[in-house]
Image 1: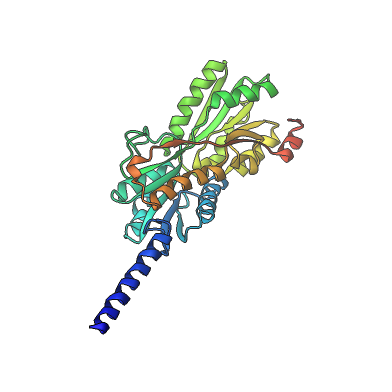
Image 2: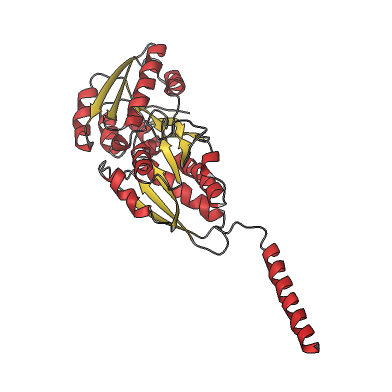
Length: 314
């Protein structure tokens, strides 16, 4: 009988110890306690803006102390891969997929209807068919990168008041670019500026596109077009040779040779997307996380380009 009591007491002590350890764990979600979290990431093309969106996302997750493994894929601008490549992430081992750019977000949504998806670098998720409602997101949500071209142009005109004609190039296969072109047209009309627009089918058309524009414009305005952004060094070289100033909707293209920007900081943009991913990892239902607008913008000037153009910007 005494031995039975000792056994019973021992079992109770063990159970109490287990319960105490469970409480000491701080109520962590089972998804984040001692388990590596796998995330798939798909980037549409290699250029500094999207690179920064991925880097910011990765850095913010590391800062959170999560044991995260990011399996990243770059599509190198191949539109056909936007619906086929996501299939590699459909297994349950991937907690979510990070879709960087509008074409990727569209493709991932179509291919992975049952997977949690966070997007970034998307201009208008509703018009692009990624979400039907910014507040009711089903299995996909994220951060938009829309900026006001009118506000940017107004600031630019204070420095270059004689500008009359604006030029831009965009990819006809990117729905996010079409949205921006329409917004830019409206902005130019309201500011009394003429707009020259050239559409391209692929990256090989860019050299000819900027060559045809250079004699017709006073300033080049760069939208957040993925295909065009990947060839910004080609565009900036032509603009500098012809003493044409340039304005970008985001700072990455300034790093690659355009003159200035007061737009999206894509590193911070990626960090903002990571905040949403952290909520999902910690157990919050993605359908309850509404789409957010980009929060951090920054002013950036390429001093080398300014010097070559013979302008001084403070």
